[in-house]
Image 1 (cartoon, one colour):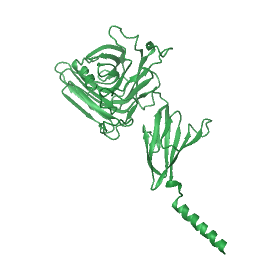
Image 2: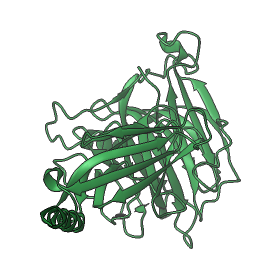
Image 3: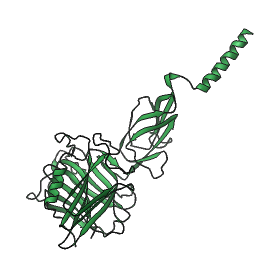
Length: 389
C-alpha cells in the first residue's frame, strides 16, 4: 500500500526553519572528508556547509562518516521529516535566499540508498524550487515500501497535488541508485512562455553516467496541474529529505544515505568528460569542483559542459608559478585538438571535451636552476682560461 505523507505542522515547520539557508546555486559534495559542518561563513562549491533540520517524530540521526550523508528518522507520532540544506555562507536572512529560477535549466542529482538490514520504509527525495518562507515547493520522492515514485506540489503542511506517480520495482535500494530532478524552461517553442517550463525526473542503477537518457516523469508544470490546487513555483532552493509516516500504534523509520550530490545550472547528461591534471615542480593546486574519476590518480570526471576553476598552485622549494598548459579537447588526432599556454594564476575551463592541464613552476625571479647555473659558471670559467692562454 502506498504511504501518503501528511506531515501536518511538520513540513510547514521545516520550511520556516530553512528560511535563511537556501541551497546555493551550483554546489557538489561527495562527503569524503566525513564532515557536513564546514565554515558556515564561507561558501565552498566543492564542500558546502550543510544544515540539518528535524521536525516531528521520536528520533533523528545524521552521519557523514563512510563517505555518505545518512539521514535517519523514526516516529510514533504519525510523521517525521529530516532535511539537509547546503548553506551559502550568508547569515543575513534578508539576503541569503539564493535561488535557482526559471530563466535557465538546472538540476539536482544524488546517489541514494537505504541502510541494508533495516526495513525498506520511508521516502527519500528532493525539495525543488522550495520557498522556505512561504512554505511551498515541488518534491520529487521515492517511497521504499512499495517503490512509489512521484512529483508533488506542497503548500505548507498540505501535499496538494501528485503528478506522474507510478511504481518502480527495478531500483537497487541496498546498493544505491541515482535520482535526478531537472528543471527545463525550454519545454516548448517559446522559452519566455512559462507554460513551456517542465519538471523532469529520472532514476537508474549502476554508475552516474549509465543513465540511458530518458525521463520517467516529464510534465509541463504550469498547465498540467489543477489550477485550483496548484501555484506555479518559478524559483526556489533545493534540499534533500528523508520522510516517514506511521499508522496508529506503529513505529516506522526512514534510513537513507546520500552521496555524490550535484546541484547546478544546466542540463545533466550521460556524457562525461575527463580532465587529467599534471604538476611540474609544483606540489599541489586547488581544483573546484574536484570530482573523482573511477580510474583515480591524475584523472577527474565531469558532466559535459561543467565549468571548473584551477588556482592556488603551490610550488616546490623556492620556485614560483610559471604557466598553465592546456591540451585538448579530445585526442591529438582530432582537428579540434590544441595546445594553449596561460600565465594567469587562475585558470577557467569548460569541460566540452577531454583535457590535460599541466601546472608548471620555475625558479623565482626568472632565475635558472642551481645545477644549471653551476654548469654555466664552469663553462664560462673554462672559456676565460682559454682566452687568457
